[in-house]
Length: 160
Length: 431
Image 1 (cartoon, rainbow over the protein chains, first blue to last red):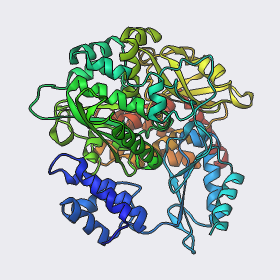
Image 2: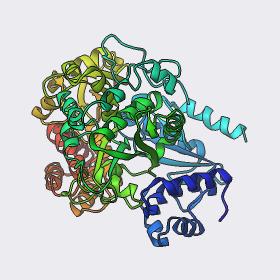
Image 3: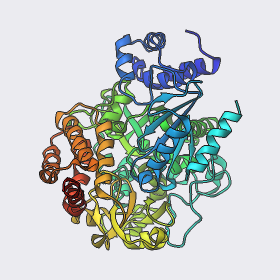
């Protein structure tokens, strides 16, 4: 597989970070960085990461099945993650998630027909003191109200 | 990113670790150096490893990741003269519901963290370290990478740290979404490129950790507290807190208060003062119902149990924990059945499945709580919830099973009337 020069550079660094003969350690960071570029953890990517980290494909595969941020199918261009864990729950996180479902017309781990947005109800993401929180791709949004979420989503749609 | 995460300084706070928050460019090495940066490392370089560890012991610093284990003692367990190289690992997997403090320490003062790691490296004679950051905190991986790059470029990491000849390499390592990886042995498996499942202890990581090497693993906040301890002396840090509970800590206040936020307060700070003064009191003038004192795994306290100082020992005395500093405040309108269900949904989702009591226990507890919440609860479920939870206690490799059981037991025992209400409503429908 070929990747962007930036990602190749990142991989090269990753493989030198760990003690000698411990390239297996690079599996998880490599998967998550590559997933951002490829769009999903494909069969081909699993084989590629296995080759580069000198492990068997099944050793990569079992990791993909474990970590919640790794996914085998592409998500929307904008992955909307709404937290409903305790701190968010107390200040409207569940209502916000219900609103997001209606707004996007999709449910948990589903993607809109145009492939632009996907939705996920997530566990605590460390924004408790600024709840309720939403993370879109890797961007945190704090004190999110249904109105603010509409603005965020409409803004991203318009920017297309 | 939206606006800054720190609060305007409050006279109620004691800012030691967070004293640079709010300075323009606080994340840069220049600002760090201009504000006491690296004084502690240079001082530590002149000390023996034993003296450094002694100073940390004197500070009465206890691990800020949740367990509250005395940090100096933990450091003393690492066999400094082992033929195997020592490894340092920073736990930046902050995932405990209610906790959001490590974000600030990395975002606004990454060089303080680096200096703390370097001092620890002197104490245990380690020459490599990894900052394990949860996958969701990608922007912090980038920020940490930038700080590390700057430290290398300016000679504060690498072959000749601060011109002292000390060699140390530091790297970030991204996780990919798993609460379990905050548990230290699961984190080590994850660092090795595996599924994050806990290991059998002993051997403890201090003896056989990452790749079988002696490993010192501490939370971001624990390492960040080291520079002030060495710079101003362990006794000065200890004096800020209460006996055996040294220093200050970052408390993440959330829930039904007027001013949620991350505040730095000394150990022993009164809980009610935290709610009423730092937190600006209860939202909408409601009454306090309960407090989660340190994150979702801590047993809840009823309103009448909250008039206490917040230190590890007092919290243990009232049957709870100070945890990782995530204090969640609940008002009188909170439905404790729904709250218990949300906690159990979390633990069921995050149970790694390695130990059967946790995997099956969280699954069945979730089902029972869901049934209750849906209005189909039975009277005997109330005792069943407590019984099932107690069966998980102490029967698993790591603390996740306990973490799921402890708050649940406290809720079902202290707020039984909330469960009763559901039964009354069900009976009313039946009639």
